[in-house]
Amino acid sequence: MIRMNPFKIRKMTISLVLVALFAISIVPTVNVLGDFTEGESVNTVKRVIVFSADAFRHDYFEKTSLPTIEWLIGQGVKAAYNVPSNPSVTAVNHVSMITGNHPDVHGILGNTFYDWEDNKSYSLFAEATDPYRDTNTGLHLMSAQPSVLHAEEAGIATAVFAWPYVDDGTTYGGAAPTYVFDYDYFGAENTRTTMGIAKKTVDTIIAHPEIGLAFSWWPGVDSRGHYAGIDSTFMIDELEKVDNALAYVIQRLQEEDMLRETVIILASDHGMAPVHDTNFFLEEKACFELAINMTGIEPYIAHDAAFELLYFMDETNVSKVEEFATYLEGQTGIERVFVNEENEGIDIFNANRGINISVFLEPGYCRNFGDTYVGMHGYLNTNSDMHGIFIAAGPSIKQNTTIDGISMIDIAPTVLSLKDSLSDFETEGTVLSGAIGDRTTEFLNPDYVVESSLSLIPAIAFLVIVPVISVIRKKKK
Image 1 (cartoon, rainbow, N blue to C red):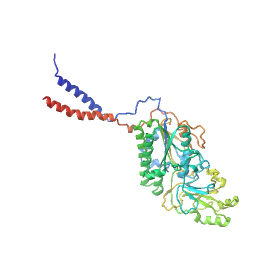
Image 2: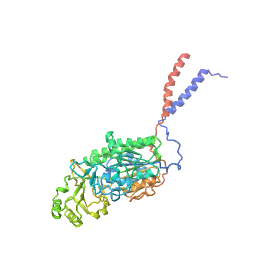
Image 3: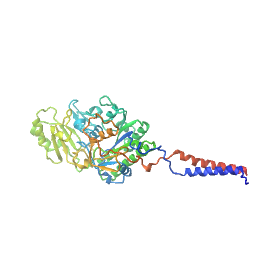
Image 4: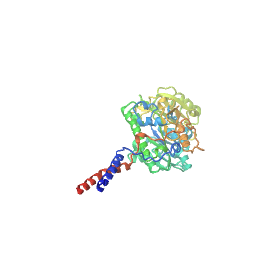
């Protein structure tokens, strides 16, 4: 019988353990996303997050490689385009997106518009020379319920991040989202960037996993389009920042085992058109002066960059207003003029904030507010340059599917439908049934395999125990 030295047995045992530990330690990653039974939770929707990449035009995908967005498209549904409400500006369409209604219902008629009842012109912009101007842009101006507040009524916690016309301290019907981080908040925190808002959004959702619906605004692409142009290297850089922000959100949610039960929607409020004439001031045009002289009436103008809203505050003679419009129609730089009820045809005739005349400029013309513009939006939504994007992926969303163009007002009813809370929601939009369907695989990105902290323990053990054994061996000698 061969007898083994007990010390040698212990050495062999320890050596085998160390080999096993080392083998485990060199495995690069360990998926710690938890057990998953396909077919049981693959289509469970716990939350829907809507990101608005402001002014991301429908054809910007062709400008540069956007791997995360391309992955999202393959995982879900991409619309051919997303048609904004008229006018195609930020305030109007973020309200359209969140309420599922056009301005004729939700009441926000532009980045600047006049309210007859208050005798004030509300605006996203400050303009000290305007006697009517009030820079309050709160929820109290809206005449349609935001989808987040409808969800709150259904017991769903919601959040908004920098969303235009959703301000801290304002409510709609006495209600507000559970969590509100408004535009001013991000300015005060010096985080009013695409990545800054993305990080706050995902950090908040991780800290409060009960949030079932969130809307988050990303500003960078719009700014680059205005000041650098749609074909500039700065624009490409900003598009890549959107892709990076989306990658960060996906990775963080996946690390917390939250992605596979999250629907992610990437949309935009409008597109952008190149500008060649930034000197269009309606009140300085000969046709405007002629209209005043020939009719004897003069309007108050709620200015915007690519359209003008005209209000005749003390005039009740409809025929004079109609005559005034005839002097503006067909003039250089003016695409269309709509008078009184004609605004119903473009969904901007609101009973409380009725516009007498709306003047839409031709793409390429805009009003200069003291900045040099090379890109602009706000034109009629029949112009394809104004069309934005819509991409959705996650549980209960079809995979690798393209659908026809959608309307901005379809987004709100669709997200509420995904959260089973659409009942009694008043909307002009429709649920995007072509986008909704069962997934066959869990919603996870293999590029973001979660690292397990446990995998470090064997490596640490190997590094610590080997020297200890060496010391023991030396002592035995």
